[in-house]
Image 1 (tube, rainbow, N blue to C red):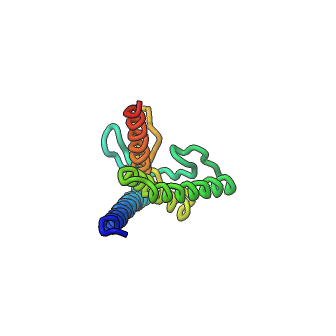
Image 2 (image 1 turned 90 degrees about the horizontal axis):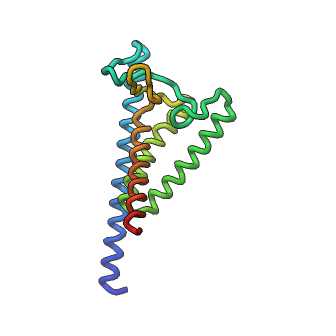
Image 3 (image 1 turned 90 degrees about the vertical axis):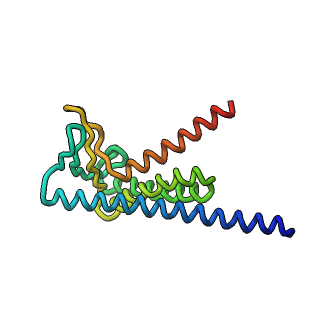
Length: 171
């Protein structure tokens, strides 16, 4: 192997390791922010009721046994465990995609993975996900969500935006 090829291979390997470390830190940061926010709201609502922020947002703890926005909520252990298993498989697939993707996509997958791991942890520990961010206008309330949901949504939007714009550039 020539010196140029060896130099390129070593630098590329170093860059991949650096990018993966950055992504790992993003996942840990998001997971930690999610855990801290959920612990704070759970502890607050053990002693108090909803936390009024302003006329458009409250923090009000709701335990979600379903998936995003409470879809597929059920009291059935079979359904809950099946959904949890599917989520676990999706998380493994996101890890695979994160490892195999280019750096900008790695960032998006890191956001999704950090949030997904936060909610998955809650499903395993609490048998439900604590959602608490209640956005509303008068009597209209959006679905209650949490910090993990925000990061998952931002990561998916980043991936979709990149995909849509890259297709427009090709056409």
